[in-house]
Structures are given as C-alpha cells and as structure tokens.
Amino acid sequence: MTAQISIQGLTKTFPGRNESADFTALSDISLEIPANEFVCLLGPSGCGKSTLLGLVAGHEKSSAGGITVAGTPVTGPAAERGMVFQQYALFPWYTVEQNVRLGLRIKRLSSSEQAEQTERMLRAVSLWDHRDKFPRELSGGMKQRAAIARTLAIDPDVLLMDEPFGALDEQTRNRLQDELLAIWQGSRRTVVFVTHSVQEAVTLADRVVVMGRDKGRIVADLRISLKRPRDRMSVEFVEAEREVSACLARAEASDPADRAA
Image (cartoon, rainbow, N blue to C red; front, side, top):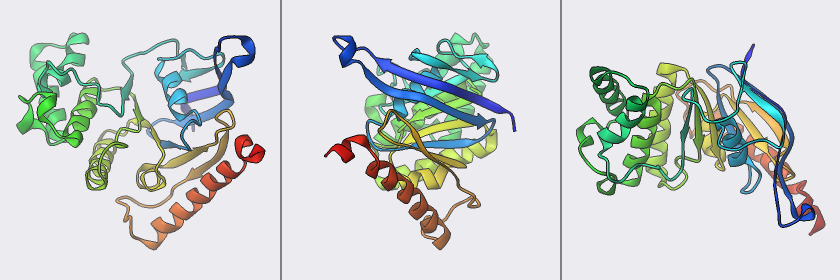
C-alpha cells in the first residue's frame, strides 16, 4: 500500500546555549502512513509526539531527514494538512460560525459555498444551534468541537490532532471520540492523532505507534484489528489495551534516564 505520509530518517535537534547543550527530541525516525488510515502516536510526556506532529504539519523544520505527503516534500504549513490543538485556538472575538468560516474565506470560496460548508460541519459536530455564540459562552467540549469543525471545513487530506481531548472530562472525551470516528468514517481522511491515553488509542486507531523518551524512537507499531464501533468494556478491547500498555511499559523501562536512575 502506497504511503500518503512518508517520514524518512527524521531528526530534530533544538539548540541550547552552546553545542553541548543542544537537545535532540527525535533521532532517525522513519514511519509510513497509508491514505485513509487512523494512526495514534502514543507515549510518555516528553517523548517527541507533538514535535513529530508539528514537523508533519510544517510548523517546525527538521534538522535531518524529511517528510513527504502525497509525494510532495513538507516545507511549511499547507491547506491539505489540517491541525487541531488541545487548547482549541479559537478567535474569541468571532462567533462559532465566523470561526469555522475563516478558513473558507482564505480559500476564497463563494459566500454560498462558505455558508453551505459551515452549516454542514457545524451540524456534523452538533453545534449548528450554537453558531451565534462566542467561545467564552461554550463548554470545553463545545470549543473543541468548534475547533474540529473549523479544521474539517477546509477539507484537508490529512488531519493532525495534538491531544485534542486531553483536557476534557471522561464522559465528554468519550462522546467526542465517537463523534470524531463517525466523521472520519464518513470522509476517510488520513488522521494522525497524538495521545497519552492507552484507552483512547485503542478506541480510535487502526494503528498505534508507541514512542519512547530515547530521542523519540519507535518502540512498537501495533495494528488494532477490532471492528467498529468498539465496545470499551469487551474482552477483546481490554486485551488490546493490555498489549498496548505492555509496550508502553517496556518503553518506560528501557528509557536511558530510568536505566541511569
């Protein structure tokens, strides 16, 4: 299967005050992601998950190696790669509808096309009745749904999500996971989703890529073959959680910092 996202020998080093203080977040990472696949990047805090996602988005420049999307090298942000952040990033002076329309205005769609696409996306995330509200009037879950709708409205080929549900309560998080899956199954975009939750990864992903703190190395690449919709209480789901958790534990146990402790 041809990869839509191809990451080859990727290294990212952040400069320190001097060369000896430089920090290498990722070293020689390679990963292939086919079109329409839902991939979760899972690992402990500080393992480089968000750094890797930022490099795919084009928000960061690599120190070595490269990334291609649909065969085109990533040199900066582009409309075909939509990003959803944990902190919503909504413009507080715009209503929900205006926030979603913003990207469509940049794409220079006609007014009628903007209106049609905005309504479709807000209905998909159950926010159409709240379209005239400002972000300050929304709950955390509603803000995140608005942020997802805004990103999906520009119709990206690749959806990049950096722990978008991490700050939400469990009930809201589970509901938004289900809504995201319903949208994804209807559109079949390629999704790369960063999380630190094993349950979230098993709920959402076709593949779970487990990363360790040792310069972002990939510890495991696991296929989750459970049929959708997935029952979080089923024996099969719990077994998949156990397998992913074991890989995560091995990643922690083999961390150089742990070995030195």
